[in-house]
Image: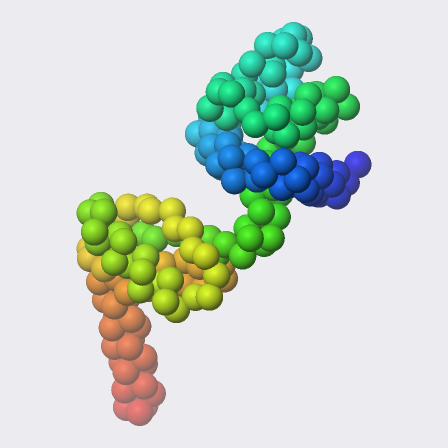
Length: 188
């Protein structure tokens, strides 16, 4: 069984159906929530695939994990997934839907890591500056890493911008090591 191919088919079908009902944004939000719950509660996947738990109960677990009332497109897809006994693929379908949605609606997703939590004004200011540099819509997940000391690290797709104090100190240290190595070679 090709998990990627099957997950893509379900995700693409869900996206197309949700778009036809103008529910794509709500489905996207619910599936982002579900993705986070999968990450935070690894036993969720076990519960959803456990055949000893009644189907109705597993559906209730899924509804709860997505935040309650589901858009009709997502509710029908969930029922189809359980009916076809593909519940072991739910997490993959969720992740693939998120990818397909971002591709279709040209959303650039990234992570902004700072040393301390930012105020709403600071976050908006950074967001606006980054938005000017990219042509796509932008979606940033905040993260805190006190080891950065100050500044930020921004991950966007395959790009990484390190404007942190820790990054600068690391670059300076590396530069001094190169100078030291060159000096040692010249003294031989």
